[in-house]
Image (cartoon, rainbow, N blue to C red; front, side, top):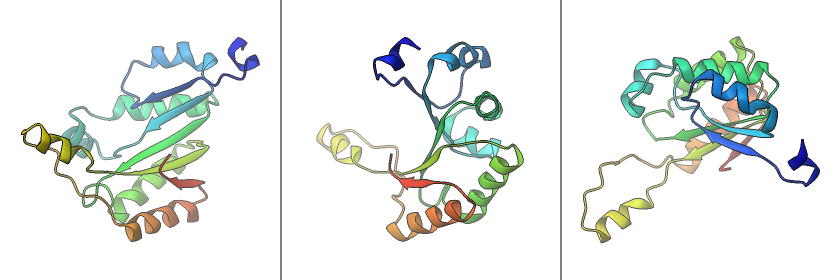
Length: 154
């Protein structure tokens, strides 16, 4: 690829909610996919994102089968998607579907925006909790024990 010869890396940051044809068109020109992986459970995904996850999971399967380099990004909201049984179900789904990922990035929710809302005299409606360092380390260990390369942040 021309951009590769110039040492330019093409990365696509995506939640995966797009027609498969879009991914088919860009795979040959993309070096890395930063792919959000929020929930396996369709009801939870719909509750917190407003859409189901079938298309998202199907696109992840497609990218993996196509040999794309995938960095799986997991935004972690304490008490919502940090439950160890939910995390193990994600691992089981990844293994059952032979999803090949280069790395898993654990992205703890942050509440930096709350101060901005207050400064704007507006109500912050996203009142999620930040996972503790201990929770993040335990989650990291669960994924590492399953054979994944994991980083906190990314």
